Image 1 (cartoon, helix red, strand yellow):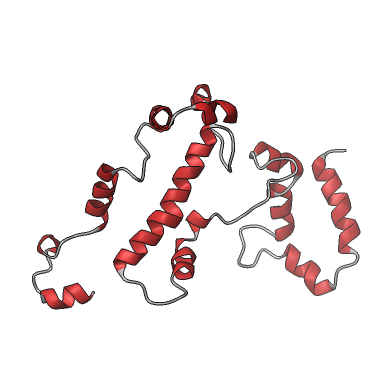
Image 2: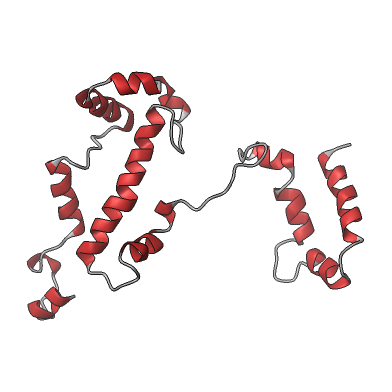
Length: 184
């Protein structure tokens, strides 16, 4: 028996216990591309999920903090009004730094992520990683990710400041009073 046949058989058994309004809602295509039943069949069968790389059983879904920056910023300042500098500091510390740490953890096979197939040759064991000096770790990260991810370096901090901040003179907002711009 195929997966679709098993689905149909299970659906018929479940459908008998549902109220009529719910049955109609599951089958309706009003406001949808296809009915909910067809969506479940096309998108959620085990064979479809595993082919799509969602795992067997499916990987647990979670909302990554990097995807929810607005909530991160609000939580960091207890839902108070933030100035732009505070927002940049929160994003750097709680989003960018955490994401960089996850990238680095992938090199030694811990954390949420793993290296892509073309980078597997750079993978090291956690033991090998712990035996490297800080300089060796930085060089290894540079080889894998193609840049120096060291948020503590002064060059990167200067680049971050240049990228995130604009002086009043460079803002090209000469129609607004400088005092007002400073408040903004």
